[in-house]
Image 1 (cartoon, helix red, strand yellow):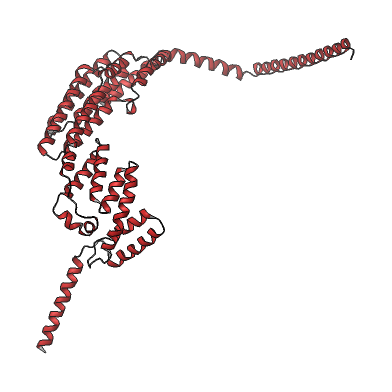
Image 2: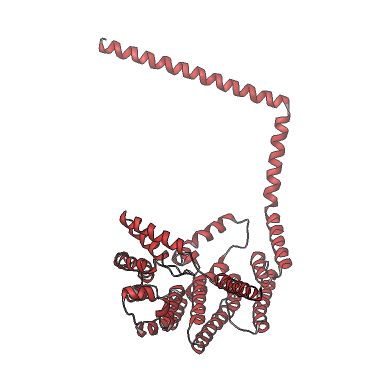
Length: 422
């Protein structure tokens, strides 16, 4: 009896252990699923649908808890298809697709070649850089060969070229430098002077429609000149380039190098803020741009950063007061908006509207008087009847004139026929 109980206990323990092992197996697919995919791939290949067949052969190589009986056969069929399909993609210049096909087919040397071509074709893409770096760093791990044993058994020994990773790791510094060069081109002081001039020459009288239209027409060459930038705004292009520089700085593999790049970027931002606030504060939108630049400054001291932004807002508020005292209410409202002084901005807009209404009041009064005269005329029945009689008489004279003209034409036609003996 005791021996039976002991055997039962051992059997239960073995079953429990086996169940735990199966439960802990994090397989991508079951053996049945991989076999079905392999069979499907064979059908697709026979039908000439090579890319779909390739994808199915790759899926048939998924990890399974039990040994996958079709992993090897699927790898043997996927490898030549990868060369065929990847070669076509590479020849057409689609290096991203070529890399994907080569890589999933176990053709790692060809995959590296396509990967580097893709990275070289996109030197300003942090996303492509990140992909290339991840792939090449994974290739350099000792576990890479073990994890891809079935594929390497088909395609042969593979040793990554260390020069590829060295080239890729140099991309952030080079990309950062190009980003700053583009930023320098975009931040053009000729554009800034034009913005200040545009504000200075803008008519302040909203009722002077002729002057306003003339001012708008005069701005067209300026707008056309800078339309090559997105939205016609070089400063946006400048800040976009600084954003790209920030991404490159964070992407650097060496932390010290990344910190150096980001410090250089911060220095450039400080230069831009100083230029805008000291030389081009005559345009409210440029002070707003200075605040945006300052907001892009990278620092852990957020209190100091906020103070610098508040300093620019204070400057805008003071310039708003100056414009308001000169009755340049539209300009004052813009400065106040940059300063975050919404109540003052609304008060300036109200003052501008009041001034405009005062200037237009004589015209409004004249229009109202004319409307009143017309109303009075049409409210007098005798005048209305007289106007109707006048209209009927005019209509009658027109009809009589038309009849007379018709008779004259007919007589001339008869006279002509007589002369011709018709």
